[in-house]
Image (cartoon, rainbow over all chains, first blue to last red):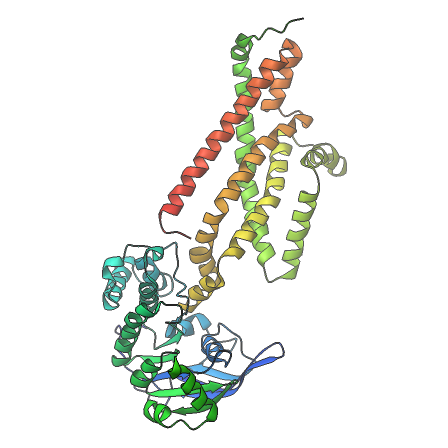
Length: 258
Length: 223
């Protein structure tokens, strides 16, 4: 439980950090995920791209059980996420989530946003949690905003606080659900650079994004999701330089035309 | 026949009216505290996943909102003892009536405020490992409570004034005291004027208190 902060030690190379097998998800009659299998190793950065409605966000939300699944299985660090016997609250501390709309707690200060998890979930001493919180805010470059409220921050700052909040539980993997899509263009860079730093430190990350440059330069592996299936996957270089699937070629063409 | 205004009656009857005022305040405070507890329970019952709880809450709110308070008061004080055989004091009946009545309205206020909090807040709370109940206590409720304050304040003021209906079961609250003084002095103008001013003073103090609380809560972070 008390693994050293923000380091990444995982000796079990064989067990993937995330293992998705044959995942199905329906919303009523609509099938959003149609048999997705994906395995993410410890320390890997996987970027998921795809047009809207392709099931990217849904897949991410299934990994921490913000959505129930219709079929298949998901394991995080060996724990079955959708098993009634699993402690979902524990699994969620292992797999942090960063949302498109930040979802910071507006009634709490920046520091309290970060320390709430450690204090209530990890039962960390308050003084210890504050020290941890300040350290994490320092890491995302917002130490001086610790006692401000979220409403006083820019979008980019909010998202960096949200990343610090996720890091505060010392997760083994962080899921990013379009972390920069709600930001003004000039604020995207500061968030991506924090994410890049995390990737360099060896954090396991699954990122749903439209930032192709991030995918190209930070991802170990890129996945193209199309109509609820993985249409193509590969390392960033071959993925972008020689896409095979016709829809992916079309998609990359559209994105790069922007 | 000319009417001569006699302000000295207002002063000389003030102690008696003050007695009534204190009883009004007492009934309001106890009634609203109980009503708040009832209302929060009923509001959460209505948000519950369990159908029977929702049904009970719906029935409660429906019946209370759909009938006049004065009928509820008389039913409670005159009607119910015929069934149960146990008489309750007018003040107890008054407190119960105010509690049950305000509870139904507070129930809707609570439900609406909790539902108005963005779904992402619950998701963010759960995603850092908080349980459903913890997220409710530390994330949703504090935000919902702030949004409730204006409507709660409104309900508190309504309930305070509603205590005047307890006159029909002989509770010696402010309105009843006024009535009795008039029965012996016949100074209707002066007494009702004084009674009205006392109600006005009470509601003004109450809204001032609520505004201070509201300001205090919104100063730290906005919702």
